Image 1 (cartoon, rainbow, N blue to C red):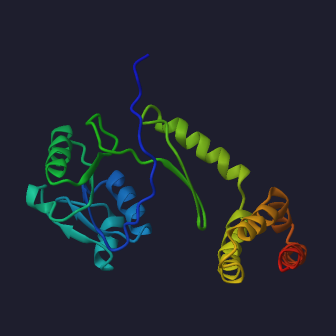
Image 2 (image 1 turned 90 degrees about the horizontal axis):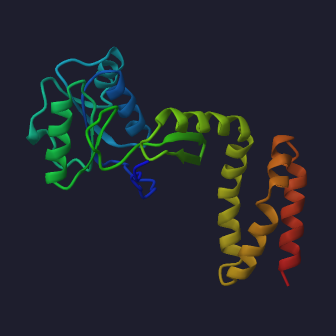
Image 3 (image 1 turned 45 degrees about the horizontal axis):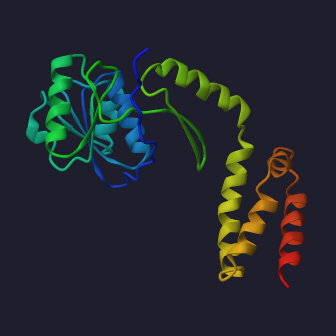
Length: 217
């Protein structure tokens, strides 16, 4: 077996940043919706688009250039998806993007990309990306689907609550990092997850208060 490409896993902050999707089919629409979820500023280049993309355009959520791709469409894009059914176009988009220093992905294409998009599990603030390095997206999706069964909606509830608790802990023990670590060691446990699943928030609050009291001296 040949060596697999090794990728550096990273979550990007795309809020308000220009992103380009070349191709207006179902694959392009899927990429657009993912970028919008990350609050990217999205432009689509394609002579025709799906009904879903046209609706997004009419709602003012995306820009749409009604024609085939041209290099000047890249502008200041930081992330580019080539999502057409023409391999030569996809290759050109990737090459032009690289020349300008933008990261490019040829979706569902044999054209080499700068990055791959993992199968994503989302439970509110919790995001887990599963990737096989491009070897088998279907396998990554299978693992992602199994994780959905293992990690239920209680994780979303707990993480949102921990975000609020974090501010309190940072203020209470601003100059005591060891005490902050002690709180998280006591609170962030699988037993706490189970209490959330059962809706026993009173016991969770009691656990936190007991921990804070023991560290207040």
